[in-house]
Length: 271
Ligand SMILES: NC(=O)c1ccc[n+]([C@@H]2O[C@H](COP(=O)([O-])OP(=O)(O)OC[C@H]3O[C@@H](n4cnc5c(N)ncnc54)[C@H](OP(=O)(O)O)[C@@H]3O)[C@@H](O)[C@H]2O)c1
Image (cartoon, rainbow, N blue to C red; front, top):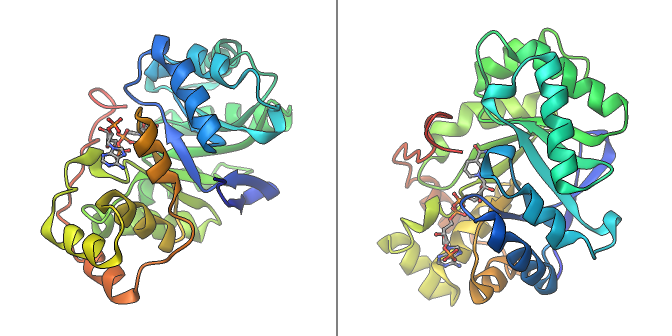
């Protein structure tokens, strides 16, 4: 199985489905990443706060570097120009990589975004990262950043699934206005909504799994996505979403399921 790539700002190609590593112990990460590589995953999403950059680095060590796409994120406590450069270097060493494909500011922090973004731009200009972006930035955060940025964020990684989509729409639209790509994290709402009757009805009719309905929903909205599983069968199921699209009526039904459901609310409690 392969994952189609999409081109983001700066001409960088990014696999549209990535494996999220939130909540996976560093000691288990290498084996899960190796299993995912075998299945066909080529995009891996971690963060310094997840504590498993070493495991990810070990897991991809035998893969040709140009074939894997690695995202990691700068944590809230490391905002500011010098702290961001130091935190990046620590992540790069833990991952044991010469460069990182995508580096994100994990959460906005009032008063410290402009200086931090300047550090991200330095890393981009030095060739230590191929693309820079943000995560959890709402429309006003993107507007604030826009005033001082030389490079617009290539990516805004947002919690996106049918149950919070309409609430996140202003952030999605603001991302697209600056030429950025919205990336859906937590596309399965952490697995909490897979028994929703509408989801089950669509899945049964299309003879696919409810999880595949949610993932295809994100891709049909032109988001790329980061989904987590540590189980071989579910890893394979989550990658097998590229040879069909959802009927437009079903897409509209799913859009209507918004509950404003955010499971990630606050950097102090959720990565
Ligand atoms: N930027 C941010 O602030 C931020 C915040 C949160 C998350 N993220 C990123 O987004 C990634 C994904 O989010 P997430 O891990 O929170 O949640 P998620 O991907 O929406 O859901 C993962 C949950 O769904 C289960 N699952 C996976 N595939 C399934 C399938 N086919 N059928 C049934 N259940 C399935 C998993 O269990 P099993 O493992 O047992 O399969 C796990 O419990 C994270 O790992 C992280 O990389 C980013």
